[in-house]
Image (cartoon, rainbow, N blue to C red; front, side, top):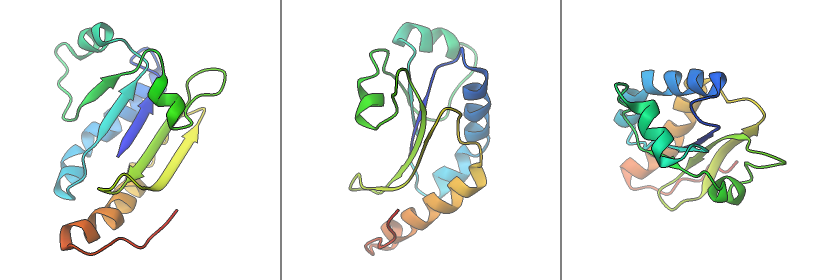
Length: 127
């Protein structure tokens, strides 16, 4: 699962990050890799994470190249959340001016994508 956030200066992004961190173990148990992509620089990410460990990787995209490639940019960065399968196919997405906060729905969506992968079956659910 990829989530795009505007960095640690964004209050709503911090709320989303907190909600995802609180459910990190549930995602891990499903076999889901959570990755955050930020508009922050590597240096700013490092400063923001001092004393605040994060259970999943956070990547810096200050030029917003990855943001643009996922459609998370329109006259500035947008919040985005993507549930992908192991082959990189998007099964669920949300791109908006505000972060997606319904983490329980995300757990259901990621569980539906991860379950076939754990069993060796091919996922048939499409967005």
